[in-house]
Length: 340
Image 1 (spheres, helix red, strand yellow):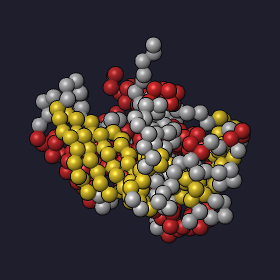
Image 2 (image 1 turned 45 degrees about the vertical axis):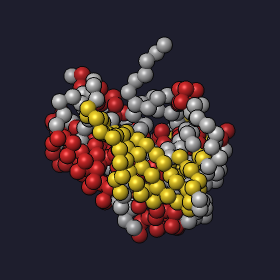
Image 3 (image 1 turned 90 degrees about the horizontal axis):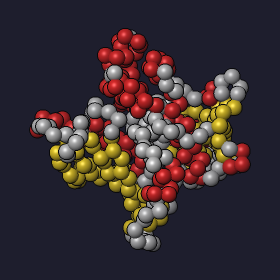
Image 4 (image 1 turned 60 degrees about the vertical axis):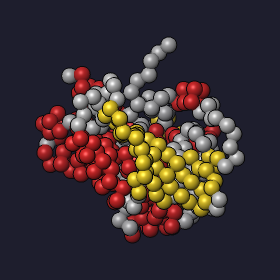
């Protein structure tokens, strides 16, 4: 039996060996595990609790801050307000109090920046670990009429993307491998890339888009980048999607970093970018409202019938099928540099 590579488990394994094990049937569960759905929905009285969990494993830099942000993003994509955060802090042997304080200060800073309370978790020194890992859990709340899923996209909807692709991956590469990358891209590019970490939250993106009206689904592309996010959104909604590559915003520092290490920016970890599907009659209003709040966004494609597949129209006019990513490009670079 083949062993797994770093990153998310293959889709087929998730469906066959993970999602089928759901414990008891609970009528309060509105939405549980599914491809493209990153947060569960549970009915509690007049409201809905939104629950999600995500670890930070692909970097050692500012992992507490990242854990809060990526979990808050999943909750925000449900149309909910992130409220309560818990984390498991797993430490390698010979760790000390300074490391714990550094990580938890980072958690505290991130939580305060988005109005979240840190309410619990677990800490331990774990045998066999080579570096610390933070596993985050975020809980939010939304009204029963206010939640959004990833499976609401319908043929004819516009696909809107906020900000730019590869935000998290670019920032992680710059933070974790500065000495490797500086000779290839220069100090100025490296410094700008490191600052992209400040764009990783999509809490405002989601809230503003919903205020504008017309949103049918939301999903934040993380592992596997924009194209994986598009595929997951299509899979969750059981629709086709056509994306125009020429409309996808890629920052110069992301292009230069990806070129330096020979990876595809469209397959690079993209926390900070939000995918929105919307009624095409409302998309201009959503774009205008996002712009008024200082959030760049663009229509990058259209939702189609499932029979048309998921396609990327390239800048040269060609057409490529969008398939699920085998792994995020970031992991290829991590493995390469750690082996050298």
